[in-house]
Length: 555
Image (cartoon, rainbow, N blue to C red; front, side, top):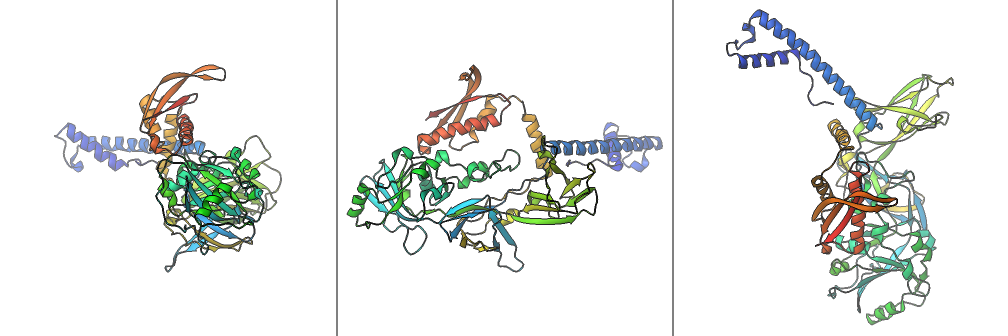
């Protein structure tokens, strides 16, 4: 893994001869004309130094390999797959789509590559449709309802000049024949201008009632309740992307596109008519509702920040979207032949392997990586090794008296890497295998986000940096530089020593005074979230037992 390999005997001899001539110009320029005794001595020393250099190189290889193995026992290169958002048309009111569902796109050129995409996690899709969207500011009403002909949310009225600095609200009517509890654990996907999406995300959402009003005590702010880590978490917890990388960093472009409806919101949401005040305002604009036109209504009180004119641009709202990543699940089957030490090499390059999903033998026993085994000695495991750009799994049955299994099956996933980036929206529209609950699929965002696998040099540098940073004191200048990288809206950071009250008294802390512009934020809730997240960001990159008190100063 070292960049500089050991030097040969001839290289060292040439360097020694060159240095000798610099020290004594009388030494002949040609090595063949050297004094025989001097030449023999130089050859002897160069041979010994070459062996020492080779030994140092071998020790470095073993030491760095052992170091990486101890800190990164999974022996992976951590490629990040490309991602997109798939819209699925369900056949039933509620369907579930698991990670084994595969969508694919084949390049149209001759010999084109086939790219597979699967849901990042098990998702719940609701067959609901947004029928009406109204933007209200004082007495002004703008109809942003989707076209009745097409499913895209292109609004049907001309833009009007909205009064500046006024409170604005959005009313949404959701058509759904099922129960409100079906929305529990479901997600809403928003597509539109970035400024409009951020205003919707930092607004207050209120559920509609059976009598036409709204439950004011059950409102929530998606900016505080919905985050990327939750969107990309699985049943066993957050996904490990290697090193300090997190889902919130890798998939940040999707932060404003998804909304989770909390349980308190869903449990009180009822189908009903529009609010009387809204109905009267709509009648003034020639928009009428029939007596039996009952929907699930949502009112969004938009924050003070942001450009309200951007809210008149078309935006789309779907209840049947999920995040799909570029991965393909493969299966490798191998007979053990009765051997007690079984070696299984995955044929794909290690840079394309995302994860080992499952390892099971012919007896039904499941195996886990050795570094994941804790105190359960009955748990069967395998060891991982990287060899010649391939990942090798070792199964050791020498410690037992039972016969080895007849065969072992490995399920793993691979990715196409950065080659999947750039697939246009609407190109991924086929299922690899029919899904009983889906009639049609389509990616509504271009494919992006793939990051190449880490090289040996990157892994060594990262491990070294992690070791150097552990329990290493940071000065205030370094902390300030770290803080500024967290959010581009941070203007300045100043640090000083301080104390704060804790559960059992007072403790020393570092007071980080962060300067921002209030105009860059949509609400006070977003500013408070920045303070909380920045504190966790600094603590994760500081020595143990370092505490921070982040203070926000508005410029």
